Image 1 (cartoon, rainbow, N blue to C red):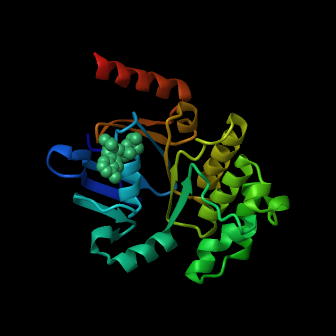
Image 2 (tube, protein in one colour):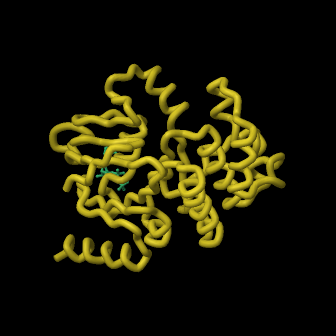
Image 3 (cartoon, helix red, strand yellow):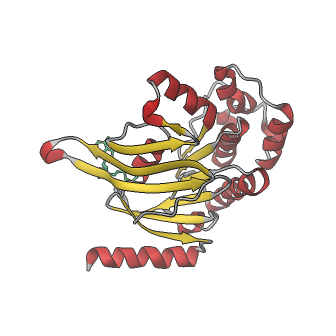
Length: 251
Ligand code: ADP
């Protein structure tokens, strides 16, 4: 299935194929996937374990090489870049949020938030930074180190870090996987706010129908292919669709 390819895309894959290994151990993780991610849209990627969700995200973010097809971030075709150019593009245009927070333990919250910009040698836009800190509700925790923060607060720091440089796109890999449901709902809530209020583009891998319900659309993967797409999802509709795919797989 090829998903509609409108114009204002923050990122797009065309006939993206990713094969791991060779010969008998070869795995086709992605099989000619074509998908576009519109600007200011929040997309959830769902599918059973092993369906290619992480591989799709890693290939789209330029973290993994591709076997065939193409990936574009904005107007830039990733295969046209050297390793150095790719690193720079990732640093400047892409934000990441991982399940495991990935904060530096020796830095306080504010230092963690501005770290990518410090590495890139760019100055944070102070008004924007204040706005991001306000969205994620971290104002009184900025001097705390990760070990002095709860899991939910650490993930807020990670989200603020991703948002701070106003990246073209944010890739979030199970961002609520390590959080209790209340903290998870908060994190999902301000990811949603960043899309609605600031036009941020977000692509989020999740297993959780409730998390997916915060997105504008859901893409369903199975065996390395996009098998369905849903707009304006509710957790009930997503759950129903997942059950139908499960049934189709075992019957
Ligand atoms: P998901 O994120 O949906 O669980 P993945 O993208 O991690 O799926 O994996 C898709 C397929 O590719 C799986 O069959 C997995 O075993 C395989 N795979 C993923 N990464 C590697 C790797 N580094 N080497 C070999 N096979 C891999």
